[in-house]
Amino acid sequence: MNVFFRPALLSLFGFALLWAQFRESGLSSISGHLELATEKRMPVRVYLLKDGKPFRFSPVEAMLPLRVDLFYRERLWRNDPDPKTLEVTCMDQSHTFLLKGGGSFDLPPGQYRVEAYRGLFYAPAVETFELKPGVTTKVTLKMQPWANGADWISADDHIHLTRSKEDDDVFLRWLEAEDLSVGNFLQLQRQMDASVQYDFGRAGEARRGGYSIRPGHESRSEYYGHVNVLGGRELIRPLSLGTMYANTLEPYPFPALIFARGRDLGGIVGYAHFSGSTPHSTQLMDLVLGNVDFIEVFQFGVLKTAAWYELLNAGLKVTGVAGSDFPVPLNRSKAWPRWVSLLGPERTLVKAPHNGSPFEAWAAGVRDGKATVSNGPLVEMTLDAAQTTASATAQFFRPLEKLEIVVNGRVAASAAGDGKLTSLSVTAPVPAGESVWVAARVQSTREKDEPEIQAHTNPVYVTREGKPLMVREARQRVTAQWEAELNHYKNASLAFSSAVHRKEFFDMAEKALTELRRPLAGERQ
Image 1 (cartoon, one colour):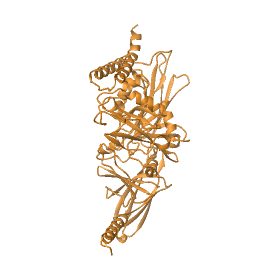
Image 2: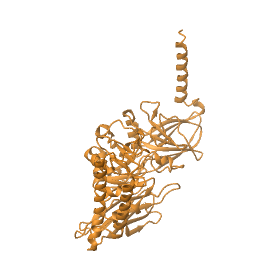
Image 3: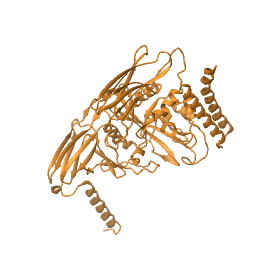
Image 4: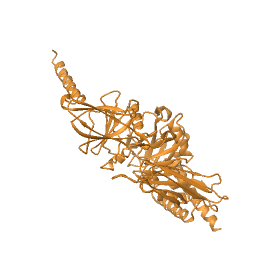
């Protein structure tokens, strides 16, 4: 035998043994075999506990090991071209998905508990069972919906996962297991490209049934903040500005230009992390000049109502959305709350038919401001034809604590739960003599380690006799805030490579300040 060929054969034999070890779970007569499935073979997220402690399912057919280092390079691994199970691991925690509604596992004999979750509109399913040596045990999970999810399109606007075409089926089934209609997968840059997408627009959109992955990008700047462009036909470069994220000091293009280009490319655009996650931001300028479609108000389990209300009371129209910034949240929680989805832990809901592209229907709702943000309950609000009365309803599978209607940020009416009620309703008068914004919010009970479980509608704007919708004190504060930001930029020695670019930025910034001051001057006359 050829002297070089023999070692190669031995290596192949060794790899074959390793593969067999990975594929098999040892002597079948001493392990218990579990056949786990949902009643209607719907994909779900599952957790296994043995003797009351977390225990990993084994074997699985695909894995996504996450160790987030801010460069977003993690990739899917498979040992089957058409996997039925996926395990996502991070921070020594395991999250398993039945991608096709079932899985087969070999496990040590003992007492077990399995919990299944599927997005917001299904109550968790729980089963206990015993595994015995050499015996196959079949367990069926019955997922019960508590709301008609078919009426809603849900989305996470902020997911960072590297994606190639061969990954699409696994990722789409993961979305289905989370009952998340739309996953906005965003490319970004930290010196090099990260969370890379294979294409953009409809050419890069993957769809299966009522579920869609639509690529976009997060453009990050040390100077102006982080912004999202969702669903556009092209990637807009440069993706990042400043040496933290890019490889240059150039502060151009600023977000207003990225937003304009993103809209031209058919996308929707807005600020990530509420105001951009940097010490200084052009968020106020872009809100005043109507450059954005949304800002992220609900993320990492926190709904930033106070800051959102301040902008609304200042007379700025602000559509709030929710996004996870996945996989960042997994690094923030040592004990991940099992009720909370991995993708879409907070999500934006749009009431629309599931015809055509889920992304397009969802994006249309966001553009119109007709969206609700939630990490659990469902809340809806309507106004009568005369816009004199607001009515709100809320429901959940858990007891609700309170449902409120807010007018200009103040509670106009409230309905309290009794520790048992899973639905509430309330009405409130809408002031007749002034222009106001009106919204509804609800809060439910929560379990250990969970964030506040809540939902919030976007505002409805009610204009009376042409009067500006503005609380004077809030407008004054916001005006002073942008004036301070503008002074910062004037003194920041921004290294524009062109005097034309510098003038373009400061002309727009001064225009925003003028617009903020205008209604205040009008009130003093």
